[in-house]
Length: 112
Image 1 (spheres, rainbow, N blue to C red):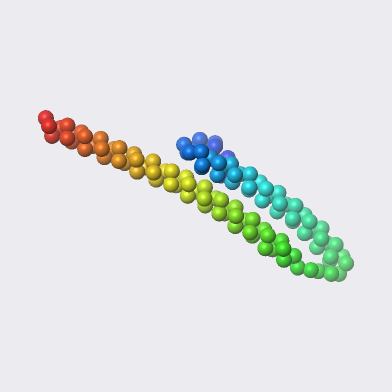
Image 2 (spheres, rainbow, N blue to C red):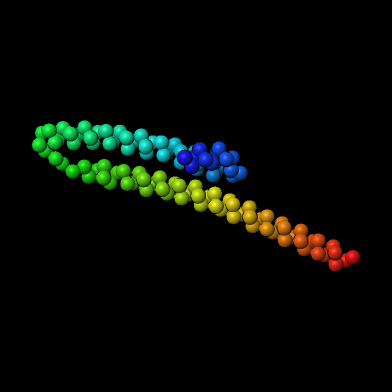
């Protein structure tokens, strides 16, 4: 969703932010696919175990899926921090430019 929004509203950004947005979209799709496959496999395994009367906890999936989500959240925060840094630097540059123009206009009017 972030990748789609990033390129749909045509955010004026640099190359690094675009790469992070693309990587975020690809990684989110991979995470979704992996979770779907793991859920299907776990369901089939649990169903068979229940029919056989044996139930084992699935510790690997319990630790693997949150780690994938943690990586995904880290990438989202990285994207947001890059984007916010870009916005703040543009705002500072714009503010300096406006202040310089105001000083220039004041100096010009004081000379008259």
